[in-house]
Image 1 (cartoon, rainbow, N blue to C red):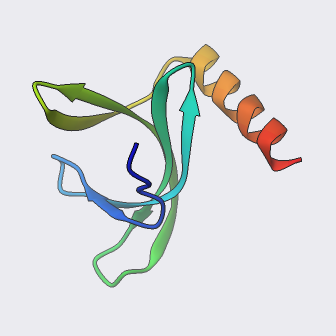
Image 2: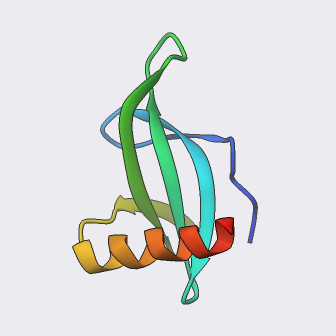
Image 3: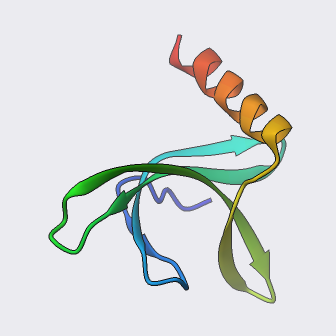
Length: 81
């Protein structure tokens, strides 16, 4: 697994996000990311993204399931302490 922390992702919608944390949880890679404006200024928009690999291509998608989001944040709290 390549460490993508501090790297910029450009999503299909044209928005850029810097990866703050990379989390491996139950065999799936997640990214806690913050939106970056064109002038490299961070916004308050923080998202949780899930990495998907299909046919040797890597994609990310927003995590919208509240139970998954809670589990990831609890996992982060445990790893912080």
